[in-house]
Length: 258
Ligand SMILES: [Zn+2]
Image 1 (cartoon, rainbow, N blue to C red):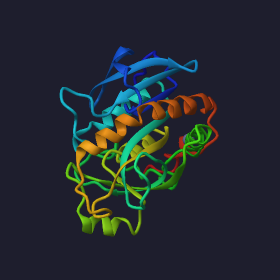
Image 2 (image 1 turned 120 degrees about the vertical axis):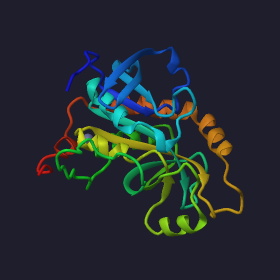
Image 3 (image 1 turned 45 degrees about the vertical axis):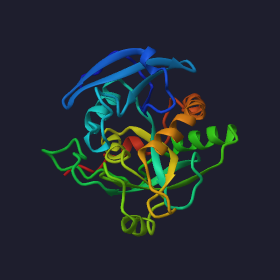
Image 4 (image 1 turned 30 degrees about the vertical axis):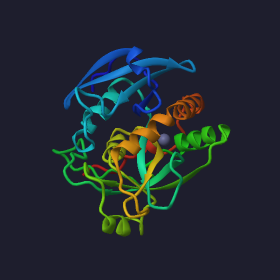
């Protein structure tokens, strides 16, 4: 794989919390899946690449995000650690604006390329989908800020429509929060042996959990209000990510290839 000489250490995927990223140094990254624009900056003495998921000419809808290109770009820039931010609806009554550090996922997506390996068989290990070290750094950052949080299981739906009440009743048996952008990103990160963890922000109650209609506006509003808090949490997490990885993420492909 061609590697850009950027020596990026950590990638942040999502874009929430980084209001001013357009002022960072923009870096086009060519991947076999298309071009990605990364925004490079220095935080806590570490080289960071921000890749905004929805940025395009228009807001890119979740089912059209080029997940493979984004994760390939992370790797090509040299980053081995990824902090992802994901907006979620709660199926457990979490308060709006609170945070969930994801510890597992269930995949209800349908039409997304979810592997880099179409010509060989690779059964990547996802028994620990989210990196325990980065997740711990996220939990510590939340704790330091005095922000209450939980850990939980993420259900990923295809979208772009919201879920039905019956779907939420079903999914709530197995998962805590629901969103549309976390999968296949987490899987693709594993396939490239990256460390990947996700900070989910609760933007709404899932369909049927309250009597109110669910709107995209309320999601945007909550995310907007939480920008500063999210930035602080991410900066703190970046500071605490160790250069040496002691987790098992880098072995995810060992014994996976037929
Ligand atoms: Zn890891």
